[in-house]
Figure (cartoon, rainbow, N blue to C red):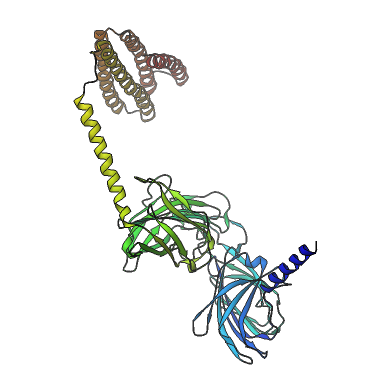
Length: 595
């Protein structure tokens, strides 16, 4: 029992050693915060002047966010005044529940009595909420920002200002905690003096924002590496408009005539690598031809236009793929290889990807796989992919990441070893397969496996072929029945006798030709002595009865158009004719199936 208590005590001491503490000697001398809500993402750029009032140097600085806000944090970075990137990592602070902390490593450490300035960039997703949540096709979209008026920090702040940049000057309401001023698309707050740590006050801005509220809800990206000079990339993308939902029905006529629906998304631009070739853009239906591609010196711009405009709550799914030469992204030294590519492509401006899965398919035989990422990702268990001429399968590295933005468009590095002699494996398998095929063909053609000639079997095969021919011809003749009906209906609506007679003449010619073909096949079946000849004769008799009913329908239609028959009398005659035709057609289909 004492040993267990001692162990728990030791674990508690070790875990507490990994917790950071808030240094009360660190003060935010000046904070200048800019909040950009011009798009569907909330982008903050904060310049912090840090002052060390203690007696010893400080090597790190803590950034704090309420847990509700931290859950929507997509990206965070820090840099010094000299634009040198500073390391930012998650931290835990004892006694501070309900808050999330990030630790910034200061370079160099901040000496006692000195000040230093850092710039912090943070991007938040799904913070702007449509208000109202539903709008009609012609209405503009309004969104609301609810945030903290003060800089949320574990340190006291001497002076701070906040500037909110809106999409345009149309601001419905905003928090008016003095001092505050509005100028065009900027709302300026402060300066506010001497604020305690973790100070909060409501900040609410209700603005018009018709920027594309596009969200990639799911992105499956596959990179297939080939040592034969090509790297294939394919993306399966689910896109949703997360703005105000469309209230009521959609009118394409109004959309094209009045050019309304300003909050909808008609198209967006995807930027691919400059060496991308064989680009394709399709969905589950097939190729989408409403796309445009423009090749530039540094990129390939692809304008993607979905089959329909995207309104709030609407979504679409598409596939985008391309090839790039491997020499631009694959490096080698002996049997060691390194792949350096983008983790994600630029899908559209101010993009947001909720969930992403990246699969990297390496050549068969790759070993000692090591991954280097510029940011944290979740690596799943490696898989195996099989394709043409594979024996053991190709190793697949599976990575997952959530809440990605444009700042995540960075290169990863994947190192692995590969024996170059394995490049000969697939060609040798192909040569061996053709060798065996030719050997089997040579043996087969030089040997006679037949014992005697089977006349009965050959006759059955000929009869089967003739029956298939009858069924095929009958299918085409049945299609002419519908052509007669269509011609009659068109004649009744247009009353154009000349056009009707011309159409009927063409159909009659096709009908006679098909009937004659069946008669010829029937004669061949009779020569073979098959019982199917009598069934084909019954089929011909039923067809003659059906043709007689069509003649009656044509006569009735001509009388109706000429005014020699009343409408009710025609309807009665049409009902009787249709009933007989259906009965005869069922008998013909039954007989055709039993041939």
